[in-house]
Length: 89
Image 1: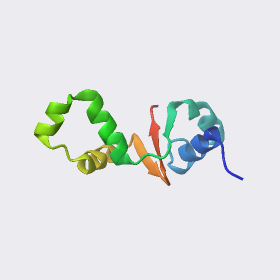
Image 2: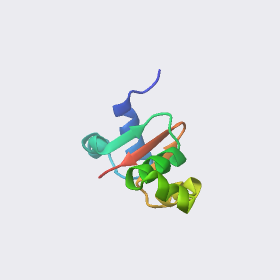
Image 3: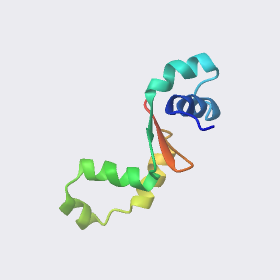
């Protein structure tokens, strides 16, 4: 039996220690976005493309893997299985 997105969000909040109990997890589940079938590198590329034009990206030879590591360290994005969880709380 697979979990639905709300259950995944609650599980994520609890296992990552963002909340301490099921009640808080249920309330804060709305602050979690799940990017299905994405990697941190995909998210990094998407963020860069939203912020900069193609010429700027090409000129600076953006290293998406490095950007992915940076956003991982920020504690907002978490890569779990084949999805990326974004905590907006």
